[in-house]
Image 1: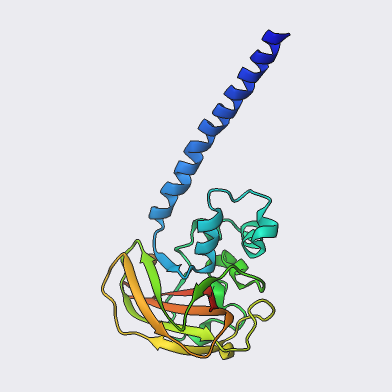
Image 2: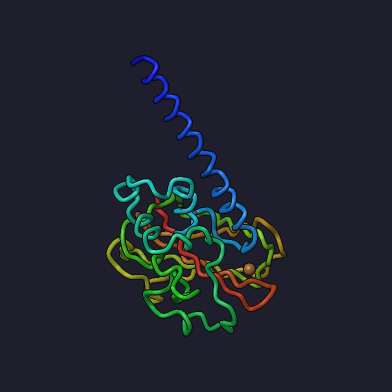
Length: 224
Ligand SMILES: [Cu+2]
């Protein structure tokens, strides 16, 4: 009896190890996949899909996510590639006509770009926020080092409620338009705002320099 129990314990231990070993190459592939399609995103305050990737990328099947982080949950359910390709939320050949090409209600998905891969980013609800003050700095991480012709940074007007309202152009105030940035892995964009409190959306347009490629990035913040 004793032997049998310890045999069965050993077997379970072996099975658990085998499972971990089997999972490691899969994780490796996922990690390897990112640089191949590497572009970039706002990593602080985190864009919606970067935040969901950062918080849950190594644990995205955890059912606790549904309660703890429901907006990430719906995003992972909708299409995990929105997170694995957190750096690929862009449109090409927009010709500077951002408002014409990105309809209201689709700003956070770049106008349903990439065949709708990022549509879950437009979902309305309690996205996790990053605390900021009136003056804060956006951090763009760009593995491809495209540089920028400019960044345009918008913040939702006070009174807009991201947890109940779909985001449209009329909800936004332009708070920063920069000049060009040289190619770099890390770029920083200082922003000054006033008169806001609570949950807001920071909407960043990154016009890359290597070609007409534009990134549309929603970051949820909490003005403290
Ligand atoms: Cu790119």
